[in-house]
Length: 205
Image (cartoon, rainbow, N blue to C red; front, side, top):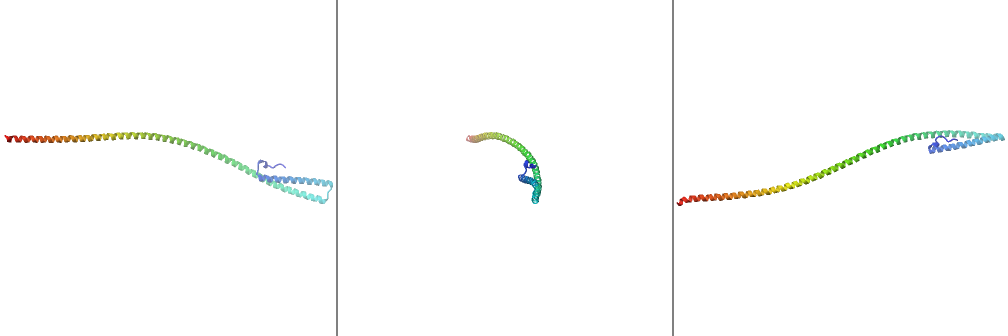
């Protein structure tokens, strides 16, 4: 008997096994029917009794009925097999579609990941540039602060010198005022003495 459609195409293991077992049963039944026919022919040739003939005929009818029943079962199993193969084909197509969709989604995710990675690299580069600029500005500010400190130190020194000059000037001014007072007092004293002498001279005459 020819191999049924489906089993050679990679169908379900349990379905194919049942199908092969039914096929073996049918082949065995057909072989037995063939043997019974040969017996009947030999009986016709050798003239068997009616009882033997009826027994063989009954057995042949039973085998034909069993054979027909087995064929029905085989047809049902073949129908199940074809249905299972159809489901497998549908599932295979669905799986292929899902695989393509997954690959497309994965490609999109990889593309976005590369774009994000590129953006990240650009941001890192920009941050490094900003950091470098800030460091340069800090160096400039530190230099300016040092200059300001130096200027403040010079100004402080100049103020101290000015204070010292002002102090010397005040001392000199005080000394000059003191000298002027002393001279003025001497001058007044000398004038008083001259006046006193001038008053005394007429009395003496």
